[in-house]
Length: 132
Image (cartoon, rainbow, N blue to C red; front, side, top):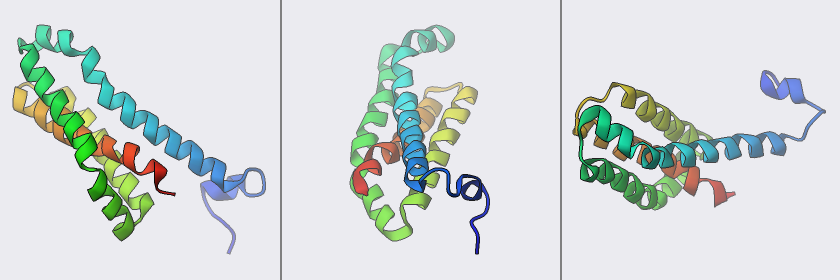
């Protein structure tokens, strides 16, 4: 059965490992970039919502804690459901957290989106890379 979709376009032209490398590099770059973004946005968030530095830093701290704490669990999830599904689920959580942050109006929403969702989603970009 011939390959279909994206793999069929590149069949014979490029080794599939290069495509996997490009996808994983993009996922890793997105995870790290999105996770680091609130550090730049502390002052604009203070001005826009009137929140103090402790509130914004608390959400960022939760993000960093979850980035490190989810590693063993994501590794176990990779073993159970596979690398592709784990990466897709975490990238979906990362995209959802980033998208929902546009709608935040209260500090608890920042803790939920940037702290929890982006923390877990970007954890996959960090922990899934060295597994293979």
